[in-house]
Length: 219
Ligand SMILES: NC(=O)c1ccc[n+]([C@@H]2O[C@H](COP(=O)([O-])OP(=O)(O)OC[C@H]3O[C@@H](n4cnc5c(N)ncnc54)[C@H](OP(=O)(O)O)[C@@H]3O)[C@@H](O)[C@H]2O)c1
Image 1 (cartoon, rainbow, N blue to C red):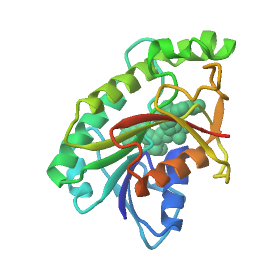
Image 2: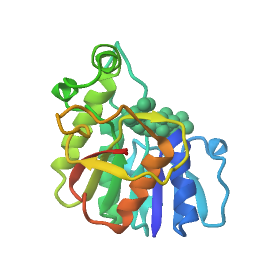
Image 3: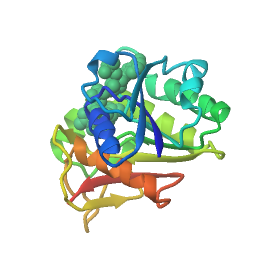
């Protein structure tokens, strides 16, 4: 497949680009800092574009089968985070103009504000309040996608990310804001970035989570 990747220079993005190339896909990495991308491959093209401009993105989307996004924006206590929604709105406009209709993007567990009630104490009372501005904007982006009927979107929600390459562990998935165990508590708290990339790439050959938000982790 021909894949355009946003956030390709990020920690998850680099795993995603490497794995996609290893599996025989052709990748266009759409970045702002080309020097940060350490991967090199004959089927990899690196281009610079403005993720907030549909015009800038459109040219690079033409001819691709799917857009994959590992974009991330820092938390802020003083102003709302807007990067997720603004970049997604530009991307969806660009996809329509470029006639691409599949996007796989990542957010996180607990984007819905009440969904963290069963999470461990420190996550509930320390981490989630600290990153709430990020989670809020991720949720707004998810809601925007839910209203986008002409595009086949999938939102992949991982728990905390560890900088680990892909494993062979089985995936656990749930259509919701976290992966619950038998008593509705979150099954664990972290997953390797390489496994998130592996899961996102696995969706290229499956329609299972089209127009859905899927919480994932590994066993
Ligand atoms: N940390 C966690 O435990 C955790 C848990 C669940 C979900 N998540 C979410 O998962 C996603 C990926 O996380 P990560 O740690 O892999 O991300 P990351 O390493 O911080 O990478 C973020 C990517 O977004 C790009 N980016 C940010 N602002 C941009 C802009 N204005 N223009 C162009 N590119 C821009 C960065 O580009 P540059 O390289 O040029 O900066 C980078 O490629 C994020 O949305 C994160 O919030 C994180």
